[in-house]
Image 1: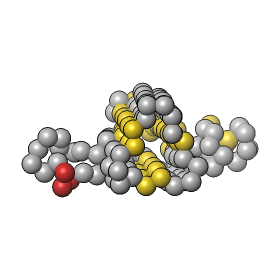
Image 2: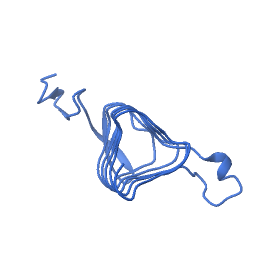
Image 3: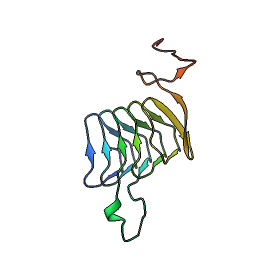
Length: 131
């Protein structure tokens, strides 16, 4: 866990998770095995902040195994980031990200797919694995 990061209570962190500096992880988030959060990533959990139902409706972010979140990205409440997916730096993710997807932008949109090795698939083939 990097410098000045905040991990609140009721957070589940599995093995080999990397949390870089100045990351915020609020209550009820789940960071599964090998997930990775770049510097200044913000996960959120309050769908309707400062309302009478805020506490009852908290919904943490779920990072599936090997999900990677680029620096300065924000993931909104209740979003699941799929296995082996990649969120580009500076993105705002408001909807679930499927397995092996590359998303980026604000709002984040799918721009590609990843090989099981974690590198982009171009023209249906991974340059590294040739799969």
